[in-house]
Image (tube, rainbow, N blue to C red):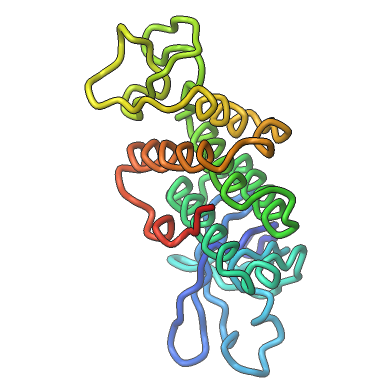
Amino acid sequence: MKLYRDEAVVLRTHKLGEADRIITFLTREHGQVRAVAKGVRRTSSKFGARLEPFGVVDVQLYLGRNLDTVTQVETIAPYGRSLGGDYSLYTTATAMVETAGRLTEIEREPAPQQYLLLIGALHALATRRHAASLVLDSYLLRSLAVAGWAPSCYDCARCGADGPHRAFNAPAGGAVCDGCRPPGSASPAPETMSLLGALLSGTWTEADSSENRHRKEASGLVASYLQWHLERQLRSLRMVERA
């Protein structure tokens, strides 16, 4: 069928011509989709405000050869309104959608788990349920896990020796024992390693009670682990305000 409908998160937008935009969606059933929204930059547009980054929408699209065409949009959750007014939340959300875009780059390949994970993280961020840095690091770890790159935060990633261990190495897969520890491995505090495990498993009681110095150290480890597996830095991650 030429017409199809899906739930989607707006990842990013680009201007096209004088009045149009190219919208990149992460959809629930069709993976990442790029589509033209015609006339949305005109003040008379009926759904221009519904296609802002971070918004969750019910969208109808017309299948095209290179780009689809947006024909109808209904708002499900306008997260962009609450996130856009706070610089810290905005940059955090930007890092999330950039990560989602990188992890679902093959267009139209279904990625329902990545979709559900992203909307859950945006909801937690928009409702201020937890500290923004914790929500971001938890999302990054869990999205990497869904992609098949779950870090070890307890047992040795190389030999499987029971943990906890005091060394962390991104290329090795996370925690490593003394016998497997490669040169240049980080030596985070035990509390930091516990925090990484809590963020990966979604144990928010433990994560919320963590100290800022351990959160900062965990953020550095998460960033290095993300960069290693994506093989490039996130441009937006450098702009995120850390506590």
